[in-house]
Length: 452
Image 1: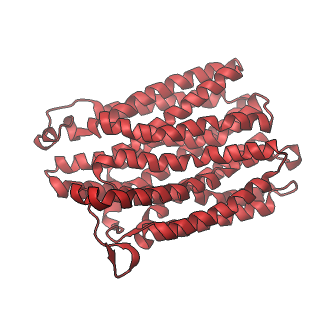
Image 2: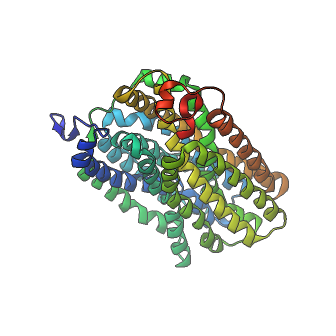
């Protein structure tokens, strides 16, 4: 499979061919998936390291709760924005090559934070270093684009869920590492010092064991088509509700516990890792359920559950019930993970359904769906991550206005209700007869979205 451009370039790749997949494709795809997860995992840890660094920052740092929420908002914002160029970098450099580069770039914010995180450093300096840490959020987009090309349509939900879930686990892992460091009496530089060699290891392993797919090319026309397609923006809105919740809560959970419930950094660290851990682990299950029952159905009922859990959080916040608050917050993390898996499964399914509705069949329909879904993933991932910015800014304003996070939770509850309505109206509401091509595929009216 190697070509003239180097031993790590694969010239021909057809995962939809079941014979090729069974003989060669599955093994190669799974190997690339494993090392992609490793690099993305560390990228998530670097991106979210400020969610735990702010816990180390006591009164001697001179930062108010509003300052800390603004700092984590800036980190989240950069992580969202860089997802767009990272999506296209895979086709320019190759999946293996870009994984090496993007992993190596993680040294920049980690070493910079190691140098400046100490009392007396100005807030503006912390903001600048936070901007650098945002590049860790881009690894998700390039990793998902790369892995999307390796797997056949019938296994994308599971593969993308596993890839994303393994990356998402980088959030609770750095929080657990922080718990160990705080418990041992160490400071933030100890935590950062642990990650510097791990970044080097991830880059080296990517170079040794990953591959580039020569057939993955940037398609400017596909990017423009995806940007003009309303479903790219509808799915971006839904992903704000799922992944935006996951990453936003990951940054904010510890701060809410310290500021609203008076927990010490160590006490907060004992609790904060549970939600992101379970939310990450369950993401592949969300993809698997979507493969079996349809992503739209799973997403719809997931938003119902997220709204219900948020309603309970409002009550727990108003009554300052820490046990109920923590338990339901963890449930909300789990639901966000399920929704992450089901929404990402919907993306390739939607564009494949559009291909069927246009009269395309077989490989032509698969190629059309792969072309637009790959182009749309970067935009959807970027906009979805902006939800994390909104969550941290909402908490900042809620604490400034009310001294608690209750106001923010009310806003989140309203958003989940809107996401439920959009999912039902666009992807599940019956509006007419089934097109012949969609009926043949066993899908729902309109474009067969209920099965995506």
